[in-house]
Structures are given as C-alpha cells and as structure tokens.
Image (cartoon, rainbow, N blue to C red):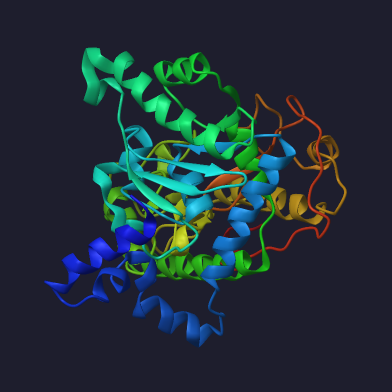
Length: 405
C-alpha cells in the first residue's frame, strides 16, 4: 500500500468521524508537545524547531552513511533508529522487545515503514516516508513453531525490494534481527552489514535545528525536576517522588523514562539501585538520573543529588558530593576540538577503580537516547575524535552550593 493511497484511505475513515483533516492533524507528532510546554518555552525565549528540516537532515545523514558503507539500504528494528530515520513511532517501548515493526531505508529508493497491525495513519505527518506496508512477524511470540517458515516469507519481501532498488548492490545494513531472519536474508543472497555502526555514526552529528529541539527538551526536563523538588520532603517514598517527575515530564511532551534511577540514604551507594517504596529520611542524600526521552523524542540525561529536610550536611556528605562535583567540572574544562578518546580518558579526573564507586563511563554522547561515543576510564579506552566545534553545556540546572566544600 503506497503512502498516498494510505492517506486517502484514512481520510475516508476520518470523514465519518470528525472531518477529513482530523486524521492528519491529530497525529501526536503533528499536535506537538502541547500548550503547557509551548507557553513555558515562549516565556523562556526558546525558538521553535523546524521539524521538517530535522527530518530531512536525519534521513540525509542515514543515506550518506549508507553510501559510505557501500550498502543498498538499511533495515531497522530498533525504535530509536526508526525514529531517527523516519520520525515515526508506534508503542516504542513495547516494540523494543516485540519485533513487530520495522523500516527499510533504501540508499537510492523508497523509505518503507512495515507497520504493526498496518496502522498506516501513524506516519501521515512525514511526507519523507514513501510507503507503509503491513509488518510480517516471524518471532516465536507470534509464529510459534512456524517461525522458520514465516522468516523465509519475511525475508523474501525484503530481498525483492533490495533487488528492485539496489542497482545490483546486495549489501544490506541491519541493526537488530533474530537468527531465523538473519539466516534467511543471507540464504536468499544478501550480504549483511552492521547497521548499528551505520546508525550510531549517522546520529553522531547533530544539526542546528536538532540543537534547537534539544534545548526545548532539556528546558522541559529541568522544569519537571524543579517541580519534583517541591514534593521532596522527609517521609515521601522514592517511588512517589519519582512519579512526580514523570508526571510533570509527560505533561510537557516527554515520551518515556529509560530507567528508575532514584535512591536515597543507604540505597544511594552503591549506585544503580532503582527507586523503591522506602521513605526518604531527613538528613539523607537523594540522587537521581533523569534518563528522559523527552519532547520531540530527544533525551535529557541529568544526574543531581539533593539533601532531604532542613538538616545541615555532614562533613562526609559534603566531601563525597564535592568529589563528584569537582570531577564533573574538571572533565568539562578539558574538552576541546581534536581531542582523541584516549587523550580525553587520560586527561580526565577519575578516582581509583577499587576505592571509589564509579559510573559506567566518564563521558557519553546523547541524542534520541544515550549515544556513541562512550568514553571509558583509563583501564579500558579506545581512540577516536570528537566534533570540531567542541562542547556546549546545554543543561542549566544548578548543583547544590550547600553541599560543596
């Protein structure tokens, strides 16, 4: 089913409900983040991103990388990769672990969404999508013991498209795929390339319009953090406190939170305990990590630590907070264009691996989620380059002056 035909079909359905235009205008991407967020962004003087330019830029980036990797196209299952290439979504968390939706972007040819349950209208907002087809599932959840047979049928459709538009190139990039599907693609004559590498490198360089969208997403996240802080009082459970942040963020167009990293007192160290039903006590430090996939689908990854109640921080609490604060500040200062990953790792401030509980990496990229590169500590590093323009701190949310020595 072509994209044009899909729109006509859906318009006829919509005309029986609220009018022909509604089927397009009521798409979540067409509606945007909403009046609450828009009014706050307007007051803050934050420009409105041009989503048409963002979509065109991101698709262009994908195709440039496909040319670089000599691929006829790329088959995407990761919802975030699909979002980057097409700005189309459908139950992103659910489809991240149920492979029922995928996209095929040809280097020189169509952009095809294979939609779960053939929900064509979910892509009506983006004219860059050439075609919407019904997805064909072969995973065991749906196919059971017929998985291998269905994978053969699934692969044949992909192979036919590659043959039609690949101009003899049978090299297809692929980000995620079950063994049955991968085997069939190769069995039917395709050479498979690493689509994760293609997409990470495509997503690496942000356009100016993407930064505009990211500024808005970050601002909405920080506003939600501040509103969560109004509920931060002794006796509130970690879960309830976290729910306040989530409510405020979603009301400003956020889409989901990747983790539940909020812990206080004895649960805050070692880090990586997700929020629990334990009440937070006066005098305890509480730490959180937003991991928020926010407005326009852009991620804001902010970590902060607060003191609960009116008690003054102990010298030990101030010491541990100051260590973390100084590490962040020093590691920001050393960033500069042309620095290799190795140089960055060996110049950054880090604490002994055994004596200090460390985060998983010293730096990482961010876009639609945590992205390449991830800069490891000195005991495990690799070499690459950073962007020519250097860095800019987009998050403005303050640290705790009372906790710094």
